[in-house]
Amino acid sequence: MSDIASGEQLDLVARRATAVAWWRDFGVRLALDVARVLVLTGVVALVLAFFSAGMLQLIVEARAQENLSLATIFPSPVELRQAWDEHQTRLLQEHIPETLWETLAGLTIAVVLGLTIAALMDFSPLLRWVLYPVLVVSQTIPIFAIAILLILIFGFGSGPKIIVVVLFCFFPVTLSTFTGLQSADPELISLLRAMGANARQIWVKARLPAAMPSFFAGLRIAATYSVVGAIFGEYITAQRGLGVFLKRSYSSFRLDQAYLAILLTALLSLLLVLLVNLVERLALRWYYTARRRSWRGPGIY
Amino acid sequence: MSSCRAVLSETERSAGLGGGDEIPVSAAPASPTIMTPEPRVPCLEVRGVSKTFRDGGQIVHALDRVSFAAYPGEFITIIGPSGSGKSTLFNIITGLTEPDEGEIVLECGVVRRRAGRVGYMPQRDLLLPWRTVLNNVILGPELDGRSRREARRRARELLPLFGLEGFENAFPETLSGGMRQRAALLRTFLTDREVLLLDEPFGALDALTRRELQRWLLGVWERFRKTILFITHDVEEAVYLADRVLVFSGRPGRIVKELRVDLPRPRQAISLLSEDLRRHEAELLAALEAANGHAPSGETK
Image (cartoon, rainbow over all chains, first blue to last red; front, side, top):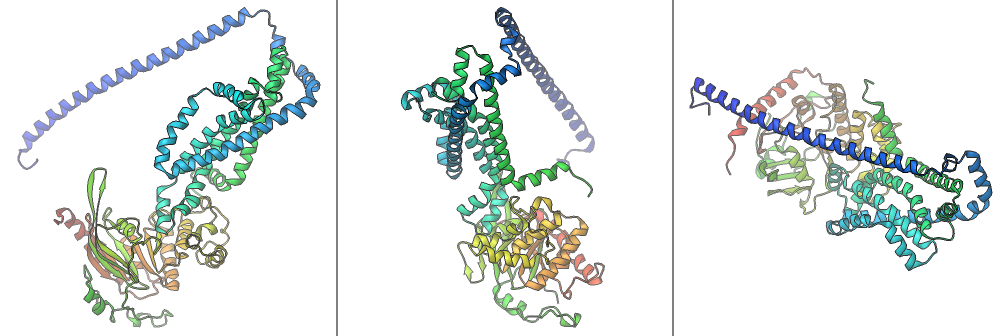
C-alpha cells in the first residue's frame, strides 16, 4: 500500500483510521465494562440474599426448639465414652465388620468397574459417545430412590448396600481415570509409535501409567464416599451395620450414640483414605519424587 | 574437494560419492580410526519426498522434492531455518506420516511399515517419568519383544560411557538436562537400529553442556559407527559433527546445498577456532542466508 500514496496523505489517512478505531474500541470496552459491573453486582447481591435468608431461617428455627438443651445436642466426651462401653461388643463384632465389608466390597467392585469403563471409553470413540451420557445420567438419579428399589429387589442382606457403594464410587474413579488416560503426552505416544510399538504396548507402557495419578485422585474421592454410601444403604433398612445403629439411636433419642456412630464413620473413612494414600505413595514413587523436586522450585544449583 | 550438489541422482551416487572422496588419511596418521571404504549401498534413501499439510486452515508446504542418501556410518547434519520441514522429514522417515510424493528406501527396499525401523530421538527427551533410567533406556528392546534381562545387562555396561553410572535407579525428573539427553540417547542407541535420527538433541541445553555433549557424542558415534541424521540450528554444531551438512531452505523445505566437511577425525581435540572449521562455517552461513533470501519468492509447482 505504501507504493501509491504519498507520505503525507498516508499519514493523514492512517491517523484518521487510528482515531476511528480507538473510539470504536473505546465504545466496545466501555460496554463490556458496564456489563461486567452489572453482572458482578447481580451475583454478589444474589449470594448475599441467599446467605442472609438462610442464616435467618436457621436462627429462627433454632430459637423455636427451646425444649432441646445444649447438653443433649452436644454430649460430652465422657458420655460418648459411656455409650462406647455400653455397645462396644456389638459394635466391634457386628456393626463395624458389616459396614467395613460392604464398604470394601463395594469400593473394589467400583474400582474394577471404573477402570474397565474408562479403558473402554479410551479405546473406542463410539463407546465414549455412548457411555459418557449414560455415566452422567447415572449420577443425576437420586441414589436414595435407587437404594429403596434395590432393597425391594434384592432383600435385606448386604447385597443392595454393596450396590449403593458401587453407585457412589464408580463415577469418580471412571471419570478421573478416563481423563488421565486421555491426558497422556501425545509426543510420547508419537515416539513410541516411531519406535514400532503397537496399540497394546502404547496403552500398557504409556497411557495407563500416565493415568495413574488421576486414577488415585479419583480413588481417594471414592474412598471417602464409600463408607458414607454403606451407611446410607444401611440406614434405609438393615439388620446390622453402623447405619442401622445410627438409625436406632435417633429413633430412641440417644444422641450420644448417634454421635458415636458419626465418629466411627468418620474414623473408618479416614482410615480408608490413609490406606489409599499409602498405596499411592508406594505405587507412584516416581510421581512423588518428581513433585518433591518441583516444590523446591527453580534454583541456581 | 567438497562436492556441493543439491540432489544426488542414482548415477552420481554410485560414481562420485562411492569413490575415494573420503577424509584424507594424512591428517590424522596416528589415529586408530579405520577408514572403511564407503560401501555403495546406502542404508537410507529419501527419494523425491514432498509433503503438504493443513495447519489450522492454512496449507503448509513443508517439503518439496527432497532427495538424499545416507551411507553406513555417515554422520549427516541437517540445518535450515525454522519451519523448513526438517522435523516433518523425520516424521516421514520414522513412518509417523506418509509423504504425498516420493518414497523412503530403507536398506533393502521400500517398506510399507517403517515404524520401528530407525532409531529416533525427538527434541524433548520424553523419558517415561514412571520408569527409572535403566528401565527407560531398555524401552527399544522391550518393544521389540527381546529379553529384558539381556537388555538391562547391556544397558548397565553402557551406563558409564553415557555418564549415567550410579543413576540407573534414579527417576528422570531428578536428573539434570544434560543427563536426561544422554539417557534419551542411550535409549536411542539401544534400539540397535542402523540409522539414528536425532532431532535437535542438544537444542535446549546451555552452551557449555552442549559443547561437552557434542564432543562426547562424536566419541560414542566413532565407537558404534551408526549412521546418524542430526537436525540442528547451530552452524558451528553442524560443521563440527558432520561428514556432510544438508542445508534446507525455508518453506517449502528443499535441499539447497550439500556441504562436505573434510576435517580430519577424530575431531574431539580440534580447536573451535581452527581455520578449517571457520571456513566451513562461513560457507554454510552464506548458503543459509542465500536460502533464506530465496525462500519467499517461492516455488510454483
